[in-house]
Length: 181
Image 1 (cartoon, rainbow, N blue to C red):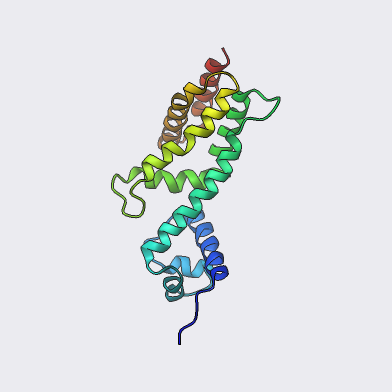
Image 2 (cartoon, one colour; image 1 turned 135 degrees about the vertical axis):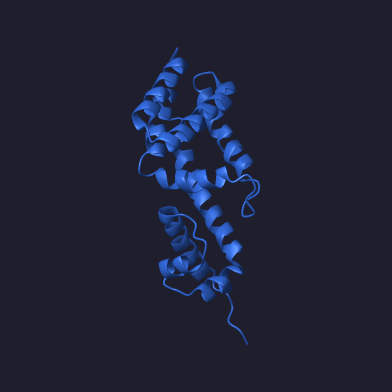
């Protein structure tokens, strides 16, 4: 008789695999994840079924972490102009805390047909529209959510391609100035 899966072990493994993938990217093979978790590739397959199922779980877990972290950054705060909130969110998203997410999901977004998460590009857009519209409602401009998201995404692509933090930060500040008018 085989052992029964233990959800707490699976969750611990998923956390460790996600930490590793955010720090180093998604590996092509299971061995780096096995080393990062202190277990074997065989045990990862036991808990997740297949390599692709594990990688999908890692992506989903990392995405939830990003949604929680970035979603909190985008929430309107009493007594704070929403453009200040957006400025602080930009600094965090493009800083050391946000870089692992941008690296991981930037690579996934670049893949036009990714079997691990076929609907990622759509979700990566629509997930942010609600929080932005809610925040922009505080300045009476919820209809600008798509525009703000497009500017953020465009500047993130620019930053990824050029590494020019000073220029992209300046461009974002200038954009926020247009919202303040």
